[in-house]
Amino acid sequence: MNQPTPSSPQRLPARKRARLINERLKPLYPEFEGLNYANRFQLLIAVILSAQCTDARVNRVTPALFARFPTPADIATCDIHELERLIQSTGYYKTKAKNIRAACNEIVHRFGGEVPGTLEELVTLPGVGRKTANVVLGLGFDTPRITVDTHVGRLSRRLGLTRHRNPLKVEQALAAIVPQEEWLHFSNRLIMHGRKVCSARKPRCEQCPLADLCPKIGVTNTATSRHKRKTTTTPRPPESE
Ligand code: SF4
View 1 (cartoon, rainbow, N blue to C red):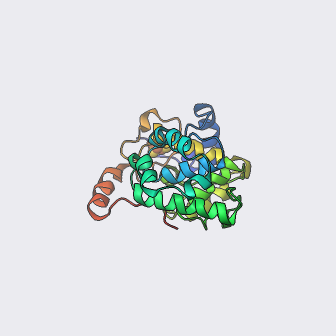
View 2: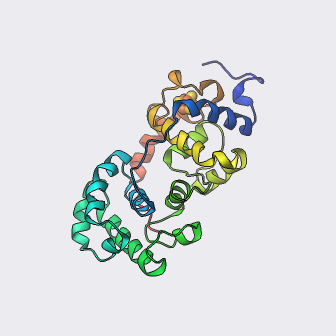
View 3: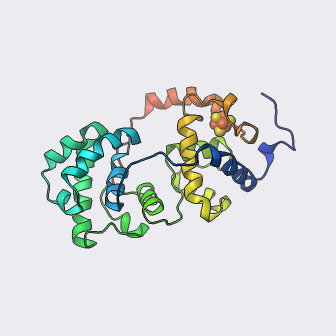
């Protein structure tokens, strides 16, 4: 691998690299391939279900779920065991079912049956943390938000846009260098790039269109650090705020 020189693109200020990264990813990922939903209620439930689960699996579960329970009121009063059965394959289904039913109860009784549209209100719902709220606000309310999931955090660090591991700090760092109108698109493009090219285990740097911009921070240590983490940590459950 060539060492970066003082004039290498890797040495450009983070704001400029973020702009170039966004421009290069834009034609590669014109559409965000993620969760399927028809309204804000379905979006919220799908995002809660996506914790520790792929979007593809959630998309296989939600048609039957929303056919059986079309509104928040239907879930708020449902039999918890039936709900658990419907979402079982998404993992952590007992916690998710409990949170989803409690969140729907809140939506019905505190918000008139509508998903609330502010971060402050959303994070009061069971199972909804800042990441979930940002996704709902960004996709459901067209509010500029940066969503920091595992892909956005990892790529932001590898690309040298931030050193932080705390999602809120990553969000703040990206917000400072990415124009507000691009917040949602930028994080969606990083998610897509993380899924397709810059995976946690095997980043395909030789095929990556960002290679000349990327200091690849942490890439060579990824396998080792993952092995170490495996021996010391367990998977994190869904958000339980
Ligand atoms: S695949 Fe490699 S070059 Fe591309 S963003 Fe990831 S670490 Fe950087």
